[in-house]
Image (tube, rainbow, N blue to C red; front, side, top):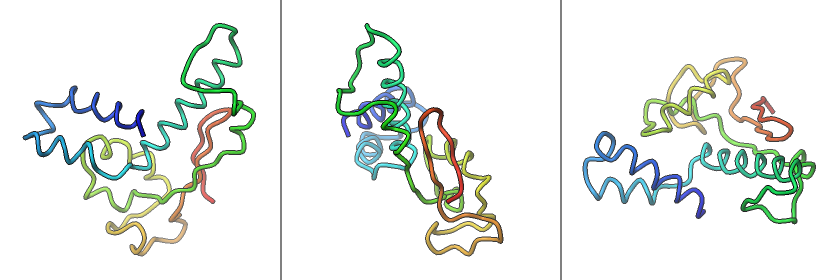
Length: 137
């Protein structure tokens, strides 16, 4: 959670004049639920750190020896396709949801309840090693 909080603080600082109209809006953003893309970003950074660490004797990072990059091949993030919720997205989420468009959801609404067209996927499986991939379950 610390890394996500740090990333949010950086976003607020960078977009203070354009995205946030008040201290209350900043505080709400900082306290919002953790988004799928934020969890994905953490996994991406963690995996990248592991790969760099294993490729160099001098790499230092926030990882410990409890996990290796090879272990990360067994880590998959099953998450909702949030493309149907694009109309209610805010801040950087608007930009990030675009990558989910390929999984369908022409109709908009609650990702759990919206009727999906044939071929659309309600869920996405994300893997991180050896490279990040988004797939249908």
